[in-house]
Amino acid sequence: MRITRKYSTIIRMAMIGFHVILFTSCYRQEIVLDRLPANTPSGAEIYVAGNFNNWDPGDQRFRMERRANGIYSITLPRGVGKLEYKFTRGDWTTAEKNECGYDTPNRSLRYGEHKTVLNTVYCWGDTEPMNCIQKTLVISELPENTPDAPVIYLASTFNGWNPGDFEFIMQKNDQGQYYITLDKQAECMDYKFTLGNWESVETNPSGNDISNRRLCFDNQDTTYVAIKAWRSTRVKTIRKVTLVISSLPKETLPGDPVYAAGSFNNWNPGNKWHAFKTDDSGRRYLTLASEDESITFKITRGNWRSVETTLSGKDIADRSFIMGHGDTLYLKVDRWKDR
Image (cartoon, rainbow, N blue to C red; front, side, top):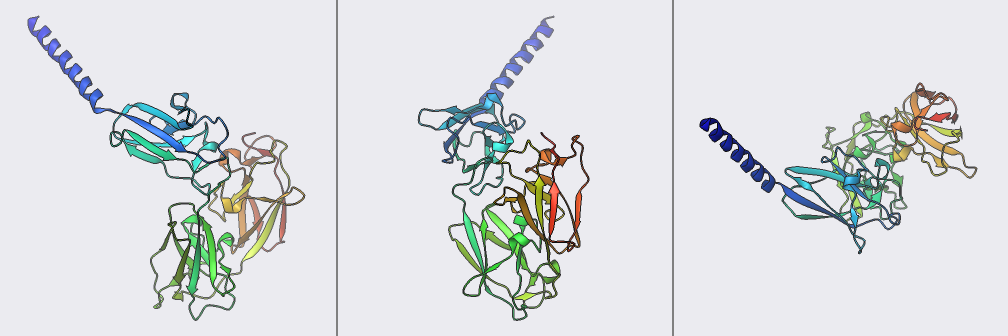
């Protein structure tokens, strides 16, 4: 029995030592939010969601405290290793965005590196960007075999590398240069120029592929580039169609955004470039351009939870349209999946 008690005591002491070491090796982490967008709703409650709470955007345990000076702060439970997080105002529709309203990568830090970390939110998911950073890309030189009055496209990480995206056509300025002004979607963008398809992508003077170009949103507002050659100058016909929504569900709010997601944008349900505009009569419309013979699509309010359905709430088949069979397509949306 003395031996049993002896080893029992040793085990207890070892366990106590282990917990002491574990506790003292963990770090508390203070997160401070010291700058917010000017259009943040008054008295907003702000939360931290991350890998420490299963990314719950409205977890009351992680609601930040608002100090008298307007700064928000929270001290997280002790931890070790890498911490990833984002700020929200209670759900993912209000999650923080970048300066131009696009998704941002998760914030990250390591416990113990800094006792307090300062953060800035530039925009919320449900508010308009106020200080969008833009950059203008100008083509200063074109190849000799460039067709007359060319239609030059930008294919990039910003548009899913679509080589003939109607929303990324270069414009012509008074000096005859082709240019495009881009909103900041990420810190940097990889890209190439085409004449509408990958057969006509830019190359080096020998006709060989070039590495992807890179554009970063730094302090310069304009970047000049030269195109040395085209792989081919044979381009396909681009056809257009205007989608007009003649009827929306009565549950649709006046400020609800409406998007088209389909074969023309990698089925992105909330692509900024495929958001419907509103005409003077209040109807929603969107002009699409494609070199494909046909397109397939559905209507959403920005995500697949809000995609259109039948009146009974069941999924509908993809809509389809043969390009060139008319310039206007009228649509009726019966119901949203989430309403």
